[in-house]
Length: 191
Image 1 (cartoon, rainbow, N blue to C red):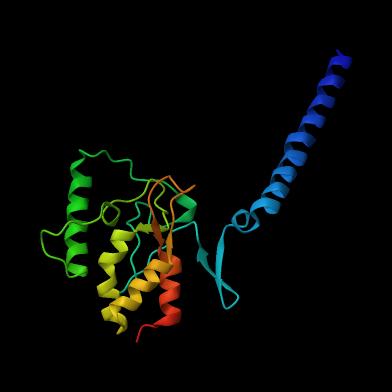
Image 2 (spheres, rainbow, N blue to C red):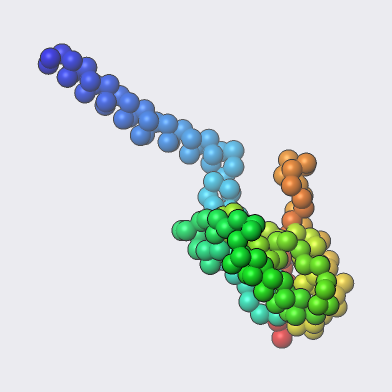
């Protein structure tokens, strides 16, 4: 029995070192070598100060900023998740209709104007940092007016913040809201 206990304790020690120390260090080292910026959280810095992450959405309020998609979790990175409401849930349908009305009013759209889906629905994580190009274009006039700049200038910044499809074929192009709003603050500060 002592021999079995010694063998079991030895295997426990070896596996603990392999899976608890060697493997995590190897994966972390490989991630740092291959994807250093992403492995560190894709932190966006301005003037040496962290202002957010390329990969995690955050709220922006005010007429002079592009607004992200709604979040079921209040953009809390420690609590990623969606509302898990189905398409026939009355509460969800009411929320979508209210968000669509608010979006139309906020952006000066007609009462029957189509609203991009991402403007009225939360992502599965509640932390999506991107909006669709269509959503950004509909917000462009409001942002330009609030900042007192030409709409074409804001549209140029939207184009500059547009990212391609994943792997060139998956999903659709998107606009990173954090990067777009930072570019706006640099080139056309809110008066």
